[in-house]
Image (cartoon, rainbow, N blue to C red):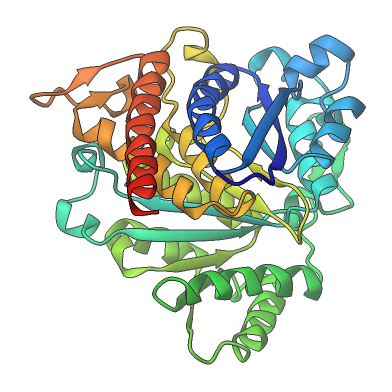
Length: 381
């Protein structure tokens, strides 16, 4: 055992709706990983903080100063979900989603990575034919802090029947360049193909986007670059999702296309994400939203949050073996036939379980895998 110990502090942000349930599930798996890491000379600790609607109810603002300070001082942040109908009547800057957008900007996480692969036994949940799913392994890289979600000016004016609304889509060259580098570096670890998505035939921001991406591509002569317009890309992700490797796009297009990929793989409940910047804390979250209609019913799928934890292990803790072990544990319970309601189709041998039991079974599978690894290491050394 390593006598010199590393210590990593994590921050958990349960948030709203099903957020607290899926974060609790991820925490169950995290506790199993912590016991293993102690034998490797690594100490993990974590604390929970409010964000979103829960924070509004507690302190009157969606991103409390204490939450932000804890997140900025952490190694990484794992978030559940924000939002719900009870806060929809608030002004845009006061709503739960403003807390998440503010956190992303404060942490300077500008690249959102959303992998889409077919997990064992879930092919029947996809609306696509099996031949379209063979070899599906897409990494969508979404620019996260620019575009229409952050552009100024924005607002509304006038009264009915003459109301007006304004949103501004804006990008600076540097914002495009830095996220493009993330996509090309990722492609070098994969199949060395990048598909950049824009709307060059209409939008000035997209014309700039394509020019900058093509310039960045010259630094990666070993990576093939192609372009797609966003509308044609939406169609192609349904017709032949297996044909793509790394998909690079701006904020709003990425938001839409990544949800489409959730449908392709059978459920948003299994989709994970990592939001990364230049060396600061990474922000990890499932992409399913707060789903208030099933909150508190032990029905939420925790696998997106657990797989987000695997991405945290990979990118922030720099523990790829642990990341693979968590992913392997998720695949193992699916092979055993365990399903939450959103991924159940009545197949023979399947057993529908709740959020808590799914997390416990993943933790058990992880513990068994990590115990085997430790035994092999002890025998070898």
